[in-house]
Amino acid sequence: MANDPDPADGAAILAEVEAKRGYTLPYHRMFAAHAPGLLRDYDRFYESLTLVPRVLTPRERETVWAGLLAAAREVHGFIHMRRAVAAGLSGDDVARAVAIAAVTEGLAVLGFAGAHWSRWALPAALKAQYLAAFDTVRGALEPRLAHLVAATCQAARRHREGMILHLAESCAAGATAPQICEALSYLLLPCGGNTLIEAVGFWEEAARDGVLPPPY
Image 1 (cartoon, helix red, strand yellow):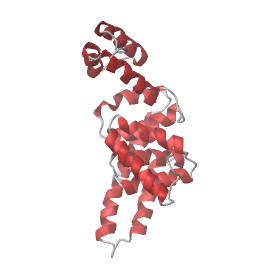
Image 2 (cartoon, rainbow, N blue to C red):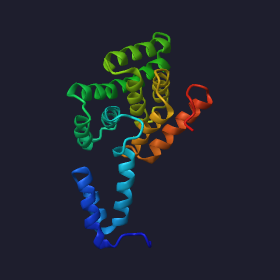
Image 3 (cartoon, helix red, strand yellow):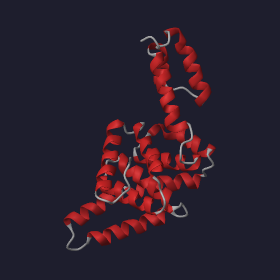
């Protein structure tokens, strides 16, 4: 392509990536050697996705990332742990986001019980127990952000009911469509485009049902 950098420019593009982020990763170095244009374009995308401020504050952004990376079991999440510290999150703040990721996994267990043991455990009572446990874990974290973290965790697991439940709670607490968009967009890196397709599809369905405001 005419706008593709000369392979000799790969080193310069890689140096720009390192200067911007403070590190390079193996695939950055591979792209620099064999696909410098891809490295340039990917770096622009990455910067726009998660480095340039959008609607979430740095603290909010890194709180969402901490929960998402824990839910996705992303080993390389240490990069965002460093950013969380830089954004002002304490160890307790990070632990709270991780705990939200942990407690949201329990919704699938409650869903199982509600489907198979409803004679003894009514779904409404199970939902109330779940939300009570969630509120205990979120502690002082405001409901809007806490439920946004939880919705993103559930989206990472492709858990429709959980994602919609928490998005509805987050919207009731004041979350906006641009904030939801930003949080869900982070799914692209640890979970891939197909997971984001499903998440936005869940949001579209819930909007048609009148449960959530529309995504667009």
